[in-house]
Length: 109
Image 1 (cartoon, one colour):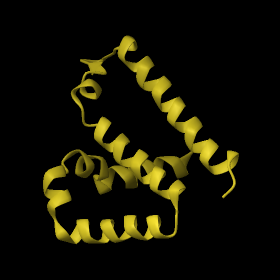
Image 2 (cartoon, helix red, strand yellow):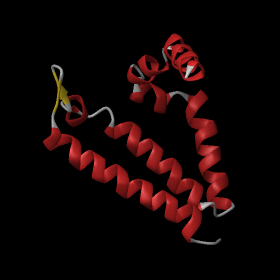
Image 3 (cartoon, rainbow, N blue to C red):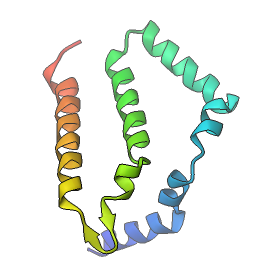
């Protein structure tokens, strides 16, 4: 149990969640230091026909985008969890997780 407490303490000390929340998407995707390597990665994966990896990258970007929407900001109002808004997120996440598991274990390349 102490291991988990130390990991959580370290994670909180890095302020990663605050940094992810404060990312300026427009500046990120117009910054050549990010766009050029990202474009090379996408082109390389298309050349090697790494469709599974491209789909995973697209899912991660979509999750990042969805997590910043107004809908996600209204999941918790005050100290109260809004169940009518959490259930669609939960089922959508389960669907995405099922699709990712299918990509890794259900198909062969």
